Length: 218
Image (cartoon, rainbow, N blue to C red; front, side, top):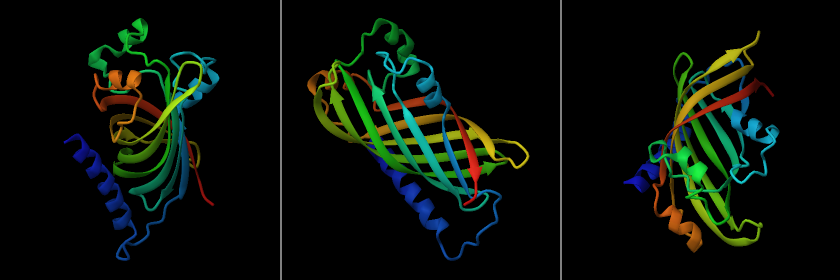
């Protein structure tokens, strides 16, 4: 069922692209055709001084999107991050407690990097929903940075949030949102990593986030 959910997300995104490019659709004029955005946590992690901490995710995430009309927005997502424990430890599993005890820390790090596609639909005023599908290549290392192996997974997410635009021309914006994340094909981990991954889920629900961005025309 979890794999089916991820596959459905992927085909829903492709379907959105197909519908938008249909010759029957009429282009609607938009104020700003393009936008770039990134999570606030990316900025905080870079300038916060803890980039090399044991628990730093070293996350860099960038979105480049195209407003096809006032309702439909498609884009490309680039992301890279470093994991020090399984992603499937949820809030009700005591994720904050496990950070303090370090009981679920990997015997090293997992670096995941990928480029994927996104589709965002404006639902009502600033309320929106987004689907993202990102294939990721994985690199496992020990604590000293020595490579232990490679892997692959497909990272999928569904987002619900609100778009707030500011300024005279409404170019600057923020998007507080909540994510539900799921991943599949994540099955090539070295033994020390796999034992921990097998204990936990392949999804994470209700992840809060805040994106900031800028709209422009070419």
